[in-house]
Length: 129
Figure (cartoon, rainbow, N blue to C red):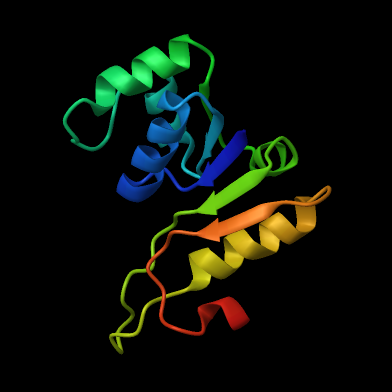
């Protein structure tokens, strides 16, 4: 399978690495260029036992790549995971702007049938937006 993961925080990075380790082609996407450059250099911004080794091994084997080019990730994937932050706003409600932003970007670049999976923490009914 060809999979893209939008967001390289804890949830997105771990998800992408595990799917790559299972033999899938995975593109991890983030808007933060410094983070993508770090990941490409094999530097992992979070701690999870065994994650660094899996990132290095799967990147070296060509199953895992990192980019800021959301359009490429969407066009080249069959399955797209949204794993972006939903921090609480001043009113305590989750800020869904990153989720809706990712969904709009997917809509702009979609080039055929895709399965889109939301892994971000969102309230009930968010899929109806």
